[in-house]
Picture 1 (cartoon, helix red, strand yellow):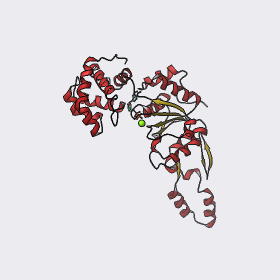
Picture 2 (cartoon, helix red, strand yellow):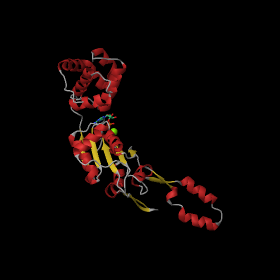
Picture 3 (spheres, rainbow, N blue to C red):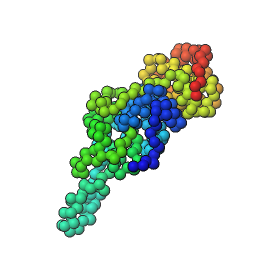
Picture 4 (cartoon, rainbow, N blue to C red):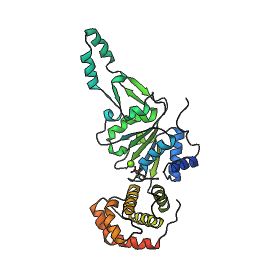
Length: 307
Ligand SMILES: Nc1ncnc2c1ncn2[C@@H]1O[C@H](COP(=O)(O)OP(=O)(O)O)[C@@H](O)[C@H]1O
Ligand SMILES: [Mg+2]
């Protein structure tokens, strides 16, 4: 079948270049993992600290391959009804009421679990045989879901199919591209890991973070961007309760732009720490001697500009 979507990249370099074109700066190892996941049609499990670009790469892949993105945000208590499909009880009841004679009622009862009474959720939508183009399925923050939920996923991930007792096996005609993310608040089970390719997403180094910042916020003065990155890289060396991720780098930079800051000075830093750190203990710690020490360090430091 001829696909309307963009063809898969044919090398690691092409994967990285395409991602970059769509706003995503991928380390070589991540580009390799993404390339292999696409070529081997295997789900890709991405683990790492919050704010390291795990969710974003799924969005960028969907964009660059011109595929729909189907996102399943996981949470405690997520079950099959919310993740895969649900029967439309209201509609079933209504049709039972509308069926008049006993004959009509009898024929309807055989029909009550037909496709038209099914409400598809993310997993069903991702493997729906009616899809003309296989989508990108993002199963986000799987560590938030209960362990039992992982068992539901095994069939979907290894066979790209779902068994629905009343309907039978629903199998994708073209396997979706699957990205699973975890912030590692608990360990993902071995059985699931075995079905995936795996990559640990680290915080970017200074040069790469600067590249991302310049790409995402081209209006940011270079000197300020360098100071922001150096400061945040320094913060990540501290034992904080919650380290700032890339989302915080970008948000803080936007805040500094709003304030028309040209360089990082103690007063600006003091008044904007809440954009960067979200726990009072961390703020108190950094507000003390750490901030002054980091600021002093950055005066000396200059990061090379890759972007
Ligand atoms: N490699 C990257 N290239 C470009 N932007 C990135 C990259 N990684 C992260 N970002 C930016 O940082 C933000 C946070 O990333 P996100 O994917 O939400 O983190 P995670 O899912 O790992 O918690 C994204 O909205 C995106 O703008
Ligand atoms: Mg995320």
